[in-house]
Amino acid sequence: MSSIEYMFLEMGFSWTLSKALPYVLVIILSFVLIYIFRKKFKKRALVKWAFRLALLIIPFVAYFMYSPIYQGDFSNNSSSIERIPAYTELTGQKLVVISMPQCKYCYGSIDKVLKLIERVPGAEIEYVVCAENEDEAYLDWYQEKGGDAITVRFADSARALTVLADGRFPTFILVDGDKPLKKWSNDGFGVVAMDNVELLLK
Image (cartoon, rainbow, N blue to C red; front, side):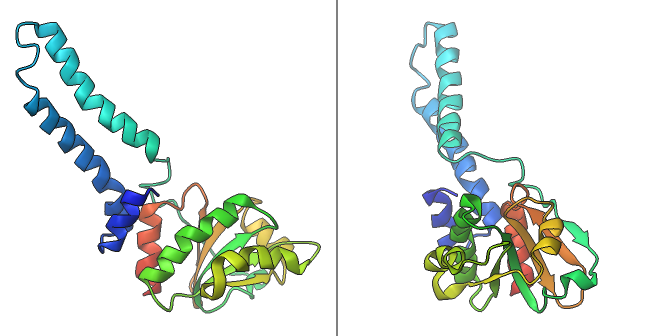
């Protein structure tokens, strides 16, 4: 998310609105600019309309390049996973991020997770690292960035959680007591999913 979107989050807007509002404002700005320059090229109709089209498109494209909209941002592509004995380590009410050692995408997700904790104080977030070699340095790498706000541990059953994640890291699992698990891939864990998780963790 961009700094502008984080600003809207700080103002109390939802994740979805914080992502969408800057685009709405850019479109409004484009129409304001078109109105301000409405008399420019008055005698050259073709040039005038080309100029207006540029004013309409360029600000939107510029902001899109600054803060792109990804495929999963405005969808909530979660899947429901029935509990089996292999998932007994997933307990309580929390968001579990299934990770692997030195995964830059897993590491990058911490920024979003910390913002979630800031908005929902007391929310429990757990990074579970699937590794054959349980080197403490793997945990320290995540813990140093997440600090005391998140829990980082090795998976009790790395193979089972890797299968649960379909081998894709990070994978986000919402654990809610004995209810079926809700799973999102990294690509599908957009702003709508964040709103959904935030609501369930409150």
